[in-house]
Amino acid sequence: DTAVSQTPKYLVTQMGNDKSIKCEQNLGHDTMYWYKQDSKKFLKIMFSYNNKELIINETVPNRFSPKSPDKAHLNLHINSLELGDSAVYFCASSQPGGDTEAFFGQGTRLTVV
Amino acid sequence: AQRVTQPEKLLSVFKGAPVELKCNYSYSGSPELFWYVQYSRQRLQLLLRHISRESIKGFTADLNKGETSFHLKKPFAQEEDSAMYYCALSRPTLGRLYFGRGTQLTVWP
Image (cartoon, rainbow over all chains, first blue to last red):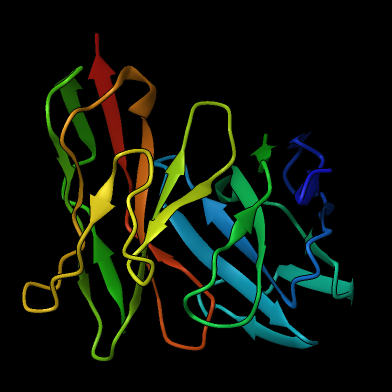
């Protein structure tokens, strides 16, 4: 009965490859997010997706592309992986609004070699 | 633009001692403020939010608009409080969270 689930939990891949991380939430939330946690544990918003409206953090390279087939899923596709993409990626969901609780997935640790 | 500052990357206290994790923010409007916690090998989860004005696991946090602070406090730390604590801000009507860099709290027995 996990509320927000991500797959895979670990991903090791070579530079230049394309990979996807999947996220699903069963909370009925309208809004989903991707966050990146770097090696210093700093968490930064990458994308938010609310009712088919995608809001992109302008610092995210366009090699990253979120895809939402429906409101319960927000997948992250990464093209031409680079060493600097190594991080833990967290999916989250919430109801709309600034004061609502965000529920996080367990994270996907991506290692690019 | 918004910014959240957690000045302490690491904080260690002994069990039973008071603990305060500092958080300062900058935002021109009225932000929503949160503390999220990540225990070892667990997912990030909400600890408390300023709008609720509640105490969770003995922790409290008061929003001080004059000092633009939202420090997290607990009078008597426990070993199970050891975790990474993130202060976060969101803008009204928007759910995106802007996190501080986190403070790793260690409570020694």
